Image 1 (cartoon, rainbow, N blue to C red):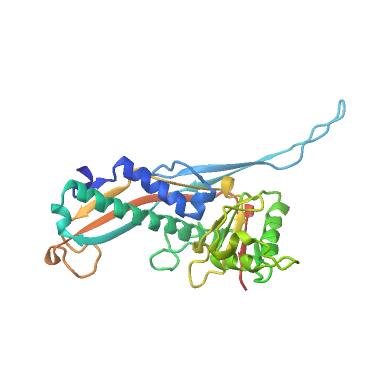
Image 2: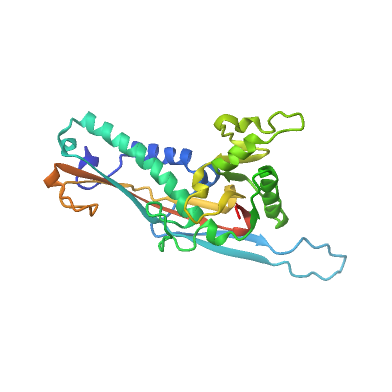
Length: 295
């Protein structure tokens, strides 16, 4: 089986399954458009007409309208995950090996999904929780300067104000990401008759919409000890792009100390499974988003 060699790729079925799982567990993948990403990177352009349309009288003078064309370069970066398993894996039947790879695929998909959100929302290395020099300023926390201060008693008003902030900048909102604390605060709000104002959020409810907006509840929006974000609203459908390189390497390493743990694989009857994925993303227009932040 090709994927069990010392160097190989996920089988196409596992790759498709992996990306489908990522789409279901990453807020950014749920709310935004995936685009194919060249391994060497690519440019996405935002096009805008700078002025309103002009009315011209008969024999009247025409004036310049003007256009703005802004490129955003999306460069894929490497994310990896590895784990030690007993070297009995190497001697297991092909069916058993495939079962192990499917389980690894499941876990890797969850980590990739969280990793995409954490890096793109906050510019952090998901494993260390500190700012990544590889990501740099390519994150919502760095690029999105429009903010609304969160009020625990009126979370709906905060979200509505955030939406208005985007719309006042002549942009549109297509989605909202909130953390579980905001979800809980929404569930506790009462109508004038004492009934829950948003019953769909009670008992851990995670509806897919709020008002007319697509919604995702995910604590990745608040990941990190220094992060103040409670929610982000904006035009995820059009102004955020992400994608991945289709080749996803999987290696079964039999020798050495690939995770720098100080333990030799052969000395402990182990092999090491390592998967890597190259993902890139771009925030095409920061003014199309607003962050709802705690004080």
